[in-house]
Image (cartoon, rainbow, N blue to C red; front, side, top):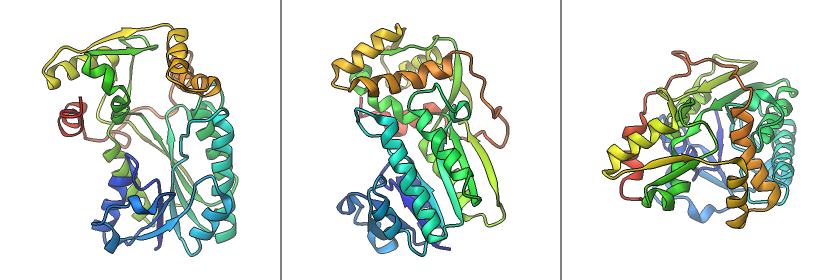
Amino acid sequence: MRIAVTTPNGHVGRHLTRMLVRAGVRPLLLTRTPDRIAAELRPHVEIARADSQNAEEVSAATRGVDALYWVDPSVMSEDPLAEYARATDALVGAVARNGIGRVVFQSSVGAEKRHGAGEIDGLAATEVALDALGIAVTHLRCGYFFSNLLLDAESLRAGRLSTVLPLDSTMPWVAPRDIAEVAALTLLNREWSGWRVQAVHGPEDLSWAQVAGILTHELGREVTVERIADDDLRQGLKAAGMPEAMAEAVLGMSTGLRDDFTPEQPRSLVTTTPTTLRSWVRDELVGVV
């Protein structure tokens, strides 16, 4: 089985690539920047230059592929949902032209809402497009990535975090490595077929207040979290140089899952993965902030 992986240097992709190699697979890595693939990986993988938003490049790179791990790349844009649509078109075209029979798609909790969740709406549109192809597809509806904390490194150094969410409201938090493990097992398992949704929820639901407490303990200094108004986040994103539509899409990921939303997949043995936030902070965040 020939397996292709997009965004192989991403938070999930870098783990997934190595897991497949350890499983005896020689994955095909699709990347815009082949020179960034680690030297240690090169003897064990194939590499193809392909921009995930370029339909011709993706179709050319995926000839002969049996299974594909697809990530819609988030890019800074004046029209982020249009960028997602271009990536979706590239994916659908490649699957149709090359007869790719199995796709594992990195989606998100909230994609089941279909509309009203900011950038997640782009993932929802990809789910819908894949479902219409009649192939074997698994949507991984992932919780909030631990690695998103790296985006707040400067604030963490100052001991501060902010969110538009209620501080005591809980949601699933997950390690990218755990998502990679679920993806690898799904790609390597030939027994499933048809349409599947696999939630990936991490070990426990956490509130921002709990996250601040964990960070305080593991970083050895106080970290506080403040709830801010939606418009404060909007203006902060725009002040940092984010285009207005992009700022709205980022804000919408929080407000869309805050207001009148119940996840389609409840937490269960199947959705629960092992890596705790405490262990991830020790491995990935200490030393960075």
